Length: 442
Image (tube, rainbow, N blue to C red; front, side, top):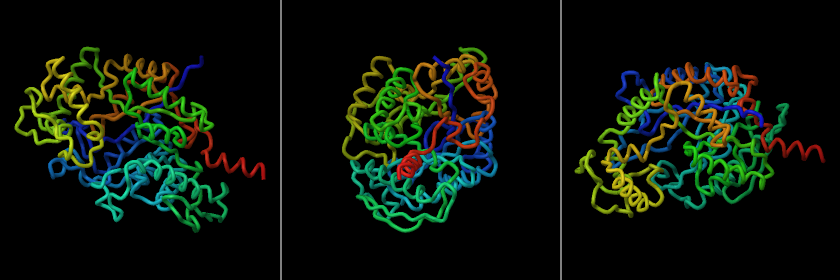
């Protein structure tokens, strides 16, 4: 069996408790210089792409702005357009919401980024279901949760039709007409096709609908399943869905979000990882996270004491805009009570255990070996690294782990192409394939 090549990507951390703000090396989350440093580090490491998440409303806890949100964070596509001028090969991926945007505008902005970057644009297609986010927009909370993926699928279909309205040679075409359940538009698209034809499409949904959407239309999945057993199960499930859409398994790359901690020895790395997790989940963060699950004000409880004996409020809740507190919170509470009882965990220890995501902890050699093992054994095609420090959190990975992956022959020593599709080993976009086939038989 041929050796599979590892893919790597970088995520600029944002609205979560990944960042250790108290570390002296922690820098700004909003200065452009921070984005430049992290992006250039990723490009120095020959990473596939640099990824920016984005929320459409600052989250709230008990009616106040959540402390871990970043106020003043610049808009993602604008940042990536600026980064296109200070990088040459690194892919540039932005989260853009399909619920509270319009296809014509988004398609034009992404095609523009693809032109500015000479073919390095990617779009992470996300949805919003909640009226809380919708309050920032004219349409409000009009969209039923069950409809969010139908709108997303039609949104992407419409964007593809807009991109395909121009010929590959940039001829003055652009005429389009789309009539569907969510969109009924016609006119001329003003932005010629980008160098990639279509930007690379990323999808991050984990529900059955999200997995099916990714199997039908995405090039990359941003997955939360980085542990071996869960990762292999997710990988196998999504890949088996591809043939029904006429797709080969290699046409969809799966990238779990992961972190890393390096040390001189395994013991040193484990000790550093434990210190980082305690810094990420301080007393206030532990209580806030528990409140989100319990749906109650728990500020009177000791974060180093036992779990509350009060039952959760499953009706209203105290958190708004935080996706991790959706779903069956009652089942989460029952599971957490069992875990805390079995392990003798305090509130803070439980939150650390339940929210941990340090996938790779060890020496540079052992981390490189595990990354390679995970790719070779079907856990993932690659990984999106989310550093705990901004902007220098990828420096050690690029300086000490990437060279070992290159030495093993499983990671590129230099870029061999110019576009993000080249880096990912993807063929032409699916819309372009369909159009070329239609032209061939006409």
